[in-house]
Image 1 (tube, chains in turn blue, orange):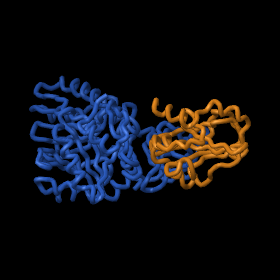
Image 2 (tube, each protein chain N blue to C red):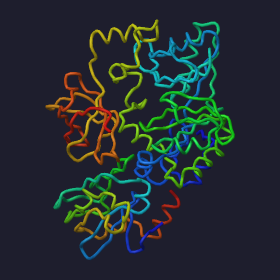
Image 3 (tube, rainbow over the protein chains, first blue to last red):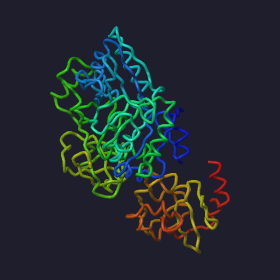
Image 4 (cartoon, rainbow over the protein chains, first blue to last red):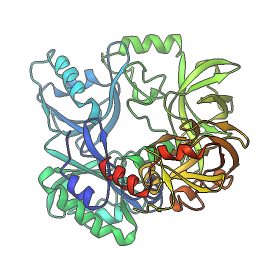
Length: 359
Length: 127
């Protein structure tokens, strides 16, 4: 099992550790609900160093990236980031990731921890079509700290060499934080104002502690993967392995906006075009429970005794104090306000399709 | 870790307190801590008759779904209705206001199959 550079700091903070994609990660420090609320109201700091970082460089790096992803990286200038699915030829999703344009002919792909090895194989296979590209796994070099929440900017800004008051969403800079080199991007997985800090693993503990020291009096709390999951769910952000995987495609997942049919050939383009023309069969929707019960991954959706879908993510929502979920539902039923039933253990419990994000 | 010595415990971390023929059942301090924030509880109906170690309900935290099992056979005489709106009481006071059910015990002999507080303490250390 792998550990991040911050593992000892988590133990010192009383974290409960779980296995997540082969990593020993903090699921919570004090309480998921408390940490969730800290992020929504003040700020939370997350260790997400388990995320994979894959660097693609060389004269044809842009061509390789463009072949791999459904979104368009050609338009990126240095200092910009794009969110994108990466698909197989059949339109199934290999992974969803962020692409950072580090420089001309240099991209950093930030991928899901549990997919890093698979992604590397897929990327290397695609790299065979190009002569001048280099693919490097940088996962162990980088630590990744996310600081998320309404006061995240003021906490981080006081420790930075550069002022980030005007930094736009999905932009980044190379800067210094607490005296060490870092990439700081305005990105995150909580739907709040927030930043992600990429830094050399040997500096991770120092920066983590400095950030906590700077922020704790203002309400900053360390937050674990439990809160990360409830935070992203309230904003209906897809989680790979739950809401999207190799058997689902970006169009069904409501990620149409990340599929740029107007760019040149990319993996899955033909198949996705076909799906788009024919129309999708199922659609990822959000729902709120109308009766008592918590929806969980894998529970069936029933209408008139017929199974019409399956829950992909579900949880208690600390912000709404309701139970919410996402599900793939047959296209004909996937409309706002439709009443559905979730099969929870032996019962059918009522829910209603709503617009997402939930908050 | 709080482990009251006047209770019996199961390997699934339920506790039971005995008062004549009637017993109260809940989950231990350790169990609530392992689960984290409890946000949902499903309990049986009053008058339902259940066997020892049979599932009688479900407790869900933000992250986990956990079944709870009868420490002894018996008939449900009362369930803690307060938990429907305030499941967090199980976290706050697992041996008190966070109790789950009251049971009319059929066979006190079944208590022999449970652990006392010393045994439970040892069991937790081993686990």
